[in-house]
Image (cartoon, rainbow, N blue to C red; front, side, top):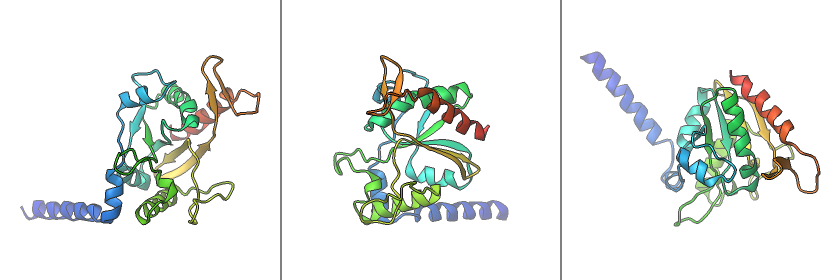
Length: 212
């Protein structure tokens, strides 16, 4: 009986610690984030026509916990971004080919009517700044061009960003900004005639294989 009580006490303490992890202002910011279902991804991404897609929307709090020790693939971005629209179908196809059943998605934008369409990367207030700093530090992300969010010293994360995480350690990062022509099945950059599709697929495959 005493053992059971001790276990319940420990569980209660852990719950209280996790609930106190964020300030009231940060909790309010986190409440504003929209969590998508699998069908939402299919509806919101123009080129993703797979009702059984691999994407799983993840809340900020759950993502920070997973980054401590879990093995998974993380896609950061949203359907509001044309570069994200361009690559999501290829992320999905590569994961399925390698029999990876889940790719977690964290959308950096707030979708509520109350706050408008804010992006956590913009650090519009202290709460957003603290949350964004925590995320970037947990990912160990460094902007290759030294770009920071205006008014801060926090590295600016471009999207879409793909992180491959093994046991809490980031083992690969892919940040590429393409557009997609569905008619010709071409991934391209404005002003560049090259088709980047095969190159991008190879990068995804090489990165995803690191967790198998």
